[in-house]
Length: 96
Image (cartoon, rainbow, N blue to C red):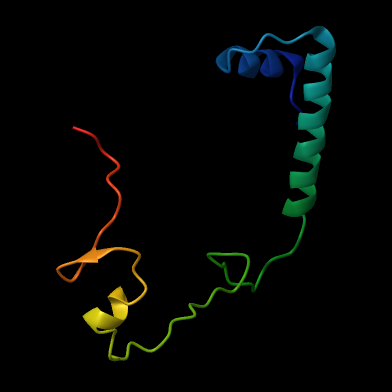
């Protein structure tokens, strides 16, 4: 079963594409080749294989959730270009 010229025109109309005659023929050929690849895949024997949710085995690389001491306020502010009352001073980006 192949894609007909009328089906290519119908899909082009749905996509609001204006195709030239040579483009219609080219798309018909490409779509029929694509269907041929799917037919090749459907011929593969997959009995006994479990379906997988993803093509590649994925594992999370989580680190242990361990509570550690953080920086003190003085350590955090030690490299700040500007500070006031124990807070970072940043440039104003919004104007009144």
